[in-house]
Length: 185
View 1 (cartoon, rainbow, N blue to C red):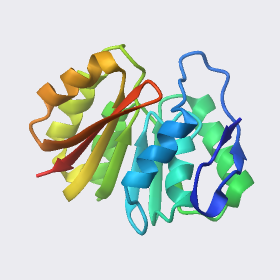
View 2: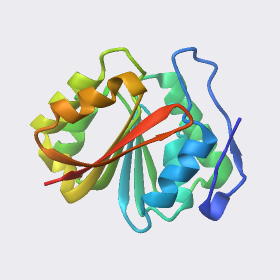
View 3: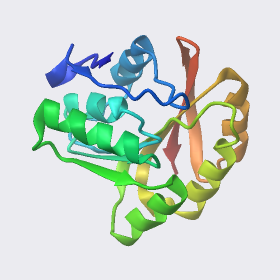
């Protein structure tokens, strides 16, 4: 179980998956990130969503719309279960697809968001394909929208090198994870 750290559902728990590949953002890191990133009344996409904890953190803090994307059907079903436990009427959409297919599909549907949060599996060569897809599909993030990528310490340099569409404005480390916060130019 994970606990939501702020907003409407503070201290409410959500279920997690037993998948070994799923790594959860530490509670202190989630709280610190949402203390500096304002999502109130904004649209938010959670790539590599897992249990959906970052989606629920955003919704709890007043995000207008959230889209959770994960390739695993188990993860997607878990996000749906967690949504139904918290509030089945929340504006949370679940996309069960690989991010390389989900992003172009969302753009074809006219989706453009204010914040994209991506938390790919650490040290498994996802950073380069992620930036390739994002750089090829700039419409996903509104002008001056934010991209936040959670990585290991080892991968933070790679994030700086790969983005042609985004300007790195901050990198912060909390509880062993690095958040690279970028703005679409």
